[in-house]
Length: 570
Image (cartoon, rainbow, N blue to C red; front, side, top):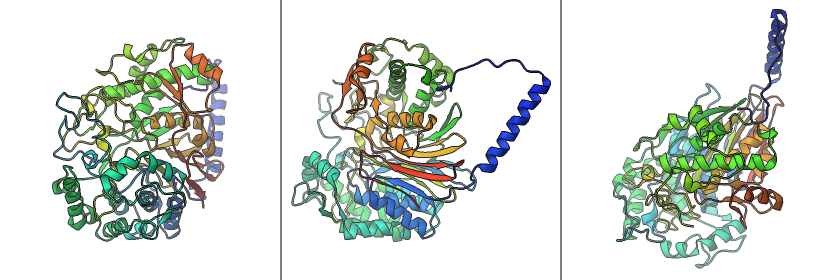
């Protein structure tokens, strides 16, 4: 993938000059190896909440590795940032083990209840019932986060699970101060929080609390303690499981004890690819992130982006996004239940065909692409990145879907349930809450895992390693794409997380960009090529990045300035 390099023809050389070039290359390689650090000089953690970052470093200081720290950070975020993740949700944990280079994705994605049906959110006329898939217990899939934390500790960690969960238990019991983001999002989901949970623990006398209010969750602390001491059975069996099922069913949901007992974490092979000197590792299905990211980079493979003017570069990126998101809508779903043509979608030849269909000067209307029927009608989630002094690393993205998920807390558990059922294709072509459309591959089915956009990612160009990801719903993949391109240009961690953002997702057929991200002339240049351009009123995303510079022997970490997170290197 050239992206920033012209293809130039080298002059012919004779045997002696060829030998000289080979010797010079070997000397350069030996010098590079000699100066590159074999292990990071420090540990780095970047997360969306200061309490979570500090929890991770506490566990590292106590002898834990990056995987133990990931348990601590995941659980602390579940307590301190309940609008983004929680024990009642799920996620993907991308792991790299330094000792042997082993890489795997832990799939802790939620599953549809076994009583789920294809049309469960449609009325008698076949139309979606407003709000049914995003509020209340009927919107909740079976959580995967607790099982993932147990799996992570038992298979990859060094410390007992109880030690890694201790910081989160203390946060839930003693309380954590809420910030302006919390206040804004409780106001945004106020109706769901009031309706689904009665006296919601997330509200102050039924109202959005002011910044500085102490969020205390004693019931959640007790559930975390059960998980800490009983492992998987502390959540998926026994008293907690009974309370979850009883609470859900009494409030109109369809969970069963069998749903919880049957849940399992799945270890999956990540999506891997190359872009010039860069190798990348990203989330696999049921996350669409790795496939869509790889497709876009493949479409760009033969284009030296730095040789293009700004408008041409933007246009090419947008058209690549459009086509990859179209394939997401048409083909992607749970690989355990549907046949997904992954090899074809990731083929360079397939990408070349997509590239050939891009007009250099004109936008391709999405409705002209072979696509999904019934086209669409006209922050949530969280991420953290960790590296320890051994070089073990974790990129993890977790979610409840919409802010505060379903809004429903199962009585006596403190567990806020997700509304991830909305990530299924409720009906072909009907958009979910983020405007994403889908087809039969992502239709609701019993026990099925819903498609996701979460994209925890590792980047490695031989000199530097980056661990990154972000929340942001349907825009997650394009945020990771833009950060990847910035990394390839040499950008540091702060540049990756602060980069201005734009996005296209096939449907709706418009380019969105952050306030201040583009000048009027830049937007006008795209409009002149036929793109519908929309400036949004709010920024999006909360990227967390850690970079290990092997050649410079340093670690840097950065938390998105759009959020209230903390990045620390110790």
